[in-house]
Image (cartoon, rainbow, N blue to C red; front, side, top):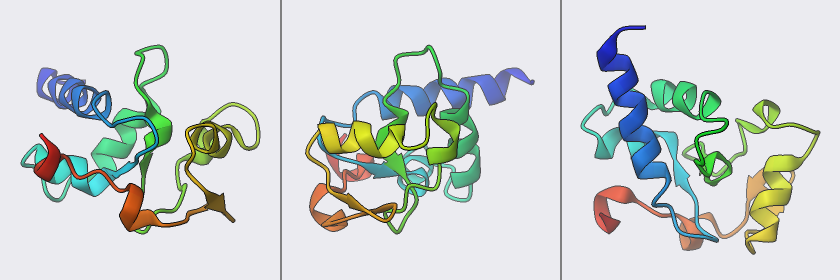
Length: 109
């Protein structure tokens, strides 16, 4: 990997670490905040590689509030269980009241 890729991942991790308990953000919102509007997929790659980095990757979902990254978590339903333990309601891989629990780093940071 090139250094700028690692640097981008580190920036993603720093933003994700600031998502409050019981709130969620999206890959695209994080990419947009970092000035990389078309890099939502790269944010997803960063989340996939965040294991062991104390990053709350379960709080990052797609722009519609779907748990599209759940297959990267151990077990069959760990991402949903982690979100529900924070009070976020999930039905059929979809966050309920998504706009209410959505955290936009561009507005919050």
